[in-house]
Image (cartoon, rainbow, N blue to C red):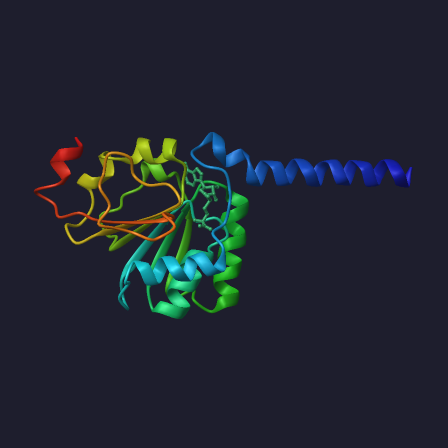
Length: 182
Ligand SMILES: C[S@@+](CC[C@H](N)C(=O)[O-])C[C@H]1O[C@@H](n2cnc3c(N)ncnc32)[C@H](O)[C@@H]1O
């Protein structure tokens, strides 16, 4: 009896984990959090400024926004499809003491308005990025920056790429380059 119960709990735990990690791939991208080291490198690479508003598309456990708020003085919004991760991230935001600077909302990245963003942080697959661009360029401020981790925006030329080609920074320069990607 005890053995059966343990098996049921183990199976339920594996299924839940699969749902949280792989399930979101059906909507855009699986869950694979950025490492702490790469996160710092990414924010330094982007040359963020205190007060900038950053939006993380697919915010996972909220680590990007928590670090951005705590260590760089940014304000941020996380867009996340998975309600469990939204709950977890909001808990982490509270525990980190940055509730006044960071909010995580349950929403779909394809139905979100990005017009207030100074920085978009994107760690999604090429397929998901292809669906977003060039459409969302129309919403962005002329001064907005887009920082992509591991997957670049195909058909857009980055302004800066790091040595190991994991960080791609785009600035819009609207009015000239946007039309090239229509
Ligand atoms: C590769 S993870 C990146 C997580 C986080 N940005 C980080 O760097 O640690 C991608 C995240 O996007 C979320 N996601 C996938 N499709 C989505 C969609 N259509 N709308 C919102 N979030 C989505 C997944 O649940 C997952 O948490």
